[in-house]
Amino acid sequence: MTETHDKALVGRVALVTGSGNGIGRATALQLASRGAVVGVNDLRPEFVNAVVDAIQASGGHAVAIPQDVSTREGMRQAVLGLAEQQGRLDILVNNAAWVRYQSIAEIAPETVERMLNIGFKAIIWGIQAAAEAMDAERGGAIINVASVAGLISGKNSVVYSGIKAGVMGITRAAAAELGARKIRVNAVAPSAIPTEGTMRNRNAELDARRIARTPLGRLGTVDDIARAICFLAGDDSAFMSAQVLTVDGGITATNIV
Ligand SMILES: NC(=O)c1ccc[n+]([C@@H]2O[C@H](COP(=O)([O-])OP(=O)(O)OC[C@H]3O[C@@H](n4cnc5c(N)ncnc54)[C@H](O)[C@@H]3O)[C@@H](O)[C@H]2O)c1
Image (cartoon, rainbow, N blue to C red; front, side, top):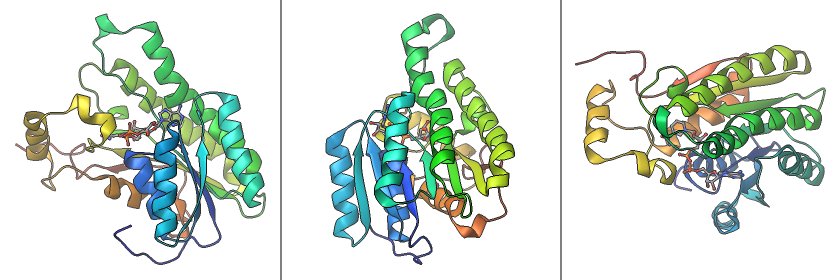
């Protein structure tokens, strides 16, 4: 952990899906640095252990949850297992995804299935399990990781754009239903962030074009997104629900040349 933060999340228990790498990893580290006990979930156990070790080495608290959360059963085990072990659940970050960009002609049924299972259905099962686990009096915060691709679309992203627009709809509908139980549901919509998951879809020329079109003149980082997620997870956003917070250096809402 390179940053220090106020311990605003001491006593809270958080689960971050897909936090072995990328945006999820940065989010797990930042939630822990703010005092939360973090359930580090990922398909890849070696990544989970490395993140848990990093959190513990900085004096934070983390629990390893090496598990596939792309099925209802897997998601329930992760969410309810952590809640049972820690005695509570306050924060769920639905971050895990598996992404392929394919032209319309290339889209294959198995790609759609896999992307939908982890990117769309798992969000629903995560919200369902979290609503069950969160305390009726204290409530909680659910943050879904969407994308600017759910707002504006490019080529080769029929499935991805569709899923991320869907995640925004799920966010609003879940917020409408769960508000009475003090559960806030919000989403973040990041622009292109360098991670292992996006390497195959990036190159220097594309990055340079994106940077030129971005008012803040740079690509975002995983920590930029993690900070926004921490804001939505904590009391500083206590009266925010059903929102999609775009974290993109200004690129989506502008058209600079
Ligand atoms: N990086 C970007 O440019 C960008 C932009 C907008 C939105 N996003 C979204 O942010 C989120 C994280 O993206 P990233 O770039 O950090 O991804 P990443 O591929 O770097 O990391 C995702 C992690 O999720 C894990 N994972 C995948 N399937 C899983 C499953 N079934 N169960 C548990 N873990 C699983 C992977 O093992 C991996 O460690 C995704 O929802 C992505 O769509 C990313």
